[in-house]
Amino acid sequence: MKRNHLTYIFLSLISVSCHGQVKTDSPKTETVKTVTHPKLVRSQGTDEYANVHCSLEDKNGNLWFGTTGEGLYKYDGKSFTNFLTADGIKGNNVWCAYEDKAGNLWFGTDYGICTYDPNSKNLKTFWVYESLVYSGDQPQNAVHSIFQDKSGKYWVGTDRGVFTCSESPNESTDFLPFLGSSNMIINQKNLHLRVISDILQDQSGKIWFASWNNEGACSFDGKTLTSFDPNGDNMVYSLLEDKEGNLWFGTREHGVCRYDGIGPQKSYTNFADIPTFSTSCVYSMVQDKDGMIWFATEFGSGSSYDKQGGVWRYDPKANGFTNFTKAGDGLTNNSVFTVLKTNSNDFWFGTRNMGLCKFDPMGKKQKFILFSE
Image (cartoon, rainbow, N blue to C red):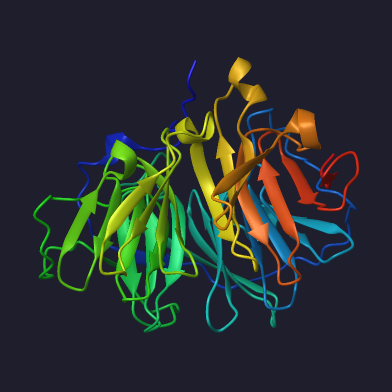
C-alpha cells in the first residue's frame, strides 16, 4: 500500500475568499526552561506516525527540530529543550524552520508563524490567515515554508496560498496574498500556489515554489508565473540549487529530477534506473562541502515497504548512489523527513516515530548515532 501524507491538507477550503490579513499577538516572553534531556524525549503521547519534520542550525550554533505533535526542540550541543504551546509556540505541529538575514528564527505551525529573537529570547506570533474561521473563532492556516529573498522580501507558503511581506514584520504590518486581484502577474495556467512546501531563489533571481497540491514545480521571474511536472510528477516537496547552478526537484513518487537551467543546453536528468530511489518521495536535500548531495526519503509507510527508503547520497564525480537504512546502518527509521548539514559538517536526520540521529562516517558497526528515546 502506498502512503498517504496528505491528511493535514485542507483542500476543502479552496473556495474561501482571500484577504491576506496578519494578526499578531502581544509579544510573549519565553518561559524559562529548567527541564532538559540528553536526547529528544516526547511528552505529548504522539504515536508512531509522528515525526521530526524540519531542522535548522542558527547563527549561534544551536540546532532546532520541529515535529508533528511534539512541538519544537532546541539542542545546544549538550541537551534538548522542548517548547510547546504553553511556551508560546502557536501549535505543536511545526512544519518548517527558517533563519532570516537579521538572525530572527521563524517557525511555521498549523496556526501561522512564530518568530523568535535569540538575543531577547522573545516569542512573537504572527497569524497569516483569510476570512474563514473555525469553531471557537480560531483562525487556522498552516505554514509549510518561509523564505527571504535577496532583496529582503519575505515569502510564506501556506495551505491557502503564498503571502509576501517586503519589510521586517511587526504589529502593524500585513502579509499580502501574492496572487491578489490587484497585481499584474501573468498566470496563464491559473496556478493557486496552495500548500507550498519549499521556496528558493536561484542564481538568476527567479523564485521557485514546490507544490504539494498538484501544481508541480512553479517559477516566477518577476512577471510570469508558470510550472512543470518534474519526472511527470505534479507533487513536489523539496528544492535545491547545487554549486553548479543545477536545480533539483524532490517529488512524491518519482525520486528527483535535475534541471540545468543555467547552461546553454538546458536539460533535464532523472534517475529512473536507481531501484527504490526513483519511486521514493524526497522530502529534503542538501549538498555537502565535497559536492555530494544527501536525500531524505520515504518509500512507503505502514507496509513491507518500510524496510526500504532511508537516506541516499549522490556522488556526482562517480555518478553513483549510496543508500543508508535502518537495518544496514542504524538509521532510526526508513521514513526520513529532514536532513541538516551543520557548519561543522555534521549531518542530522529526522525520521518517523520521532526519530533523530546523527551520521557518523567513521562508525564501524552503525553509521548513525541515536539522539531520540
